[in-house]
Image (cartoon, chains in turn purple, red):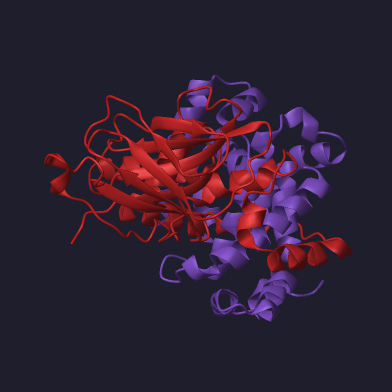
Length: 182
Length: 236
């Protein structure tokens, strides 16, 4: 599977084929995306077994919900990643964070430089350019929420600011980001 | 803050997964009911998808695909209601997906109502009827709601209820009021639920069955995954 990129697959067509019961297409989506989806899930759940659980559940959902996928609402790839992200977030909510911090993964992920993440985005990427326009703590709040699945409270704890401040930061950052990316 | 901005901020928070449980549940319903909100959510998913592309890929274990294949081959309803606390995660997924934008999923509504129920002698004629469906559109139960507020529930699928769980039936006629519990069931069987003080059921009233802790929801609001849901329908 390594070496495959999501671009090798027409996601929307494969999802439609899944809706028609074509397991080969599900396999193709798996080959193309499972490794990256596992990476997305791991950033949130922090444990490999749970990340695999999230990916398992996500592909089951993709198979079952394929008939509900509507390409007019968004890309097939984004649809798949929304599913795995939500599976991972649900797993985190079912457990206390402490359960999940059982190995070095936590430090690896949580200690990761979020600005480094921006630098890895394409230079003229709208998301990157607009994130760069946010003040750093606001940008970090947004990244902790999306990428690591942190709650408002966890972000507040991490950044050492009041909960209300984090809520306001996120809200205003979202509005600014939307306007910037329009 | 303008209404548009508010909608976008809410949709963004939903995508980030930041709202509390009750608010997330409300927003999931909004995904079903409010196309503008659903669009805003999908726009956020696209906008933020750049983060997903940066995830460090990780080779899945050899067994993962086999597990997925086995699950895919199994019957959906049996899986959805897999007993025991073994897989709370899957149940949770239901509660997420009930509101998905892609879910045209609100039940295919069938039946029937009558102003007739206001007439005398029609106590046994339902005012509205709803077919409750699982997340994958499998019909699970029929609800007939009567003018006196009682509800007749008729299962279409067997459901294994784990020993430590209870089925709870809810209805929602006004979002300001929120979901109202109609009754609890140890197992899904033909049951009449009599709860007084209910307004006469209306067209488009939501009915749903959730899986709750033994004895019913501790909060008075749905806390568990939705097994089946559907909108009541008026007659032609």
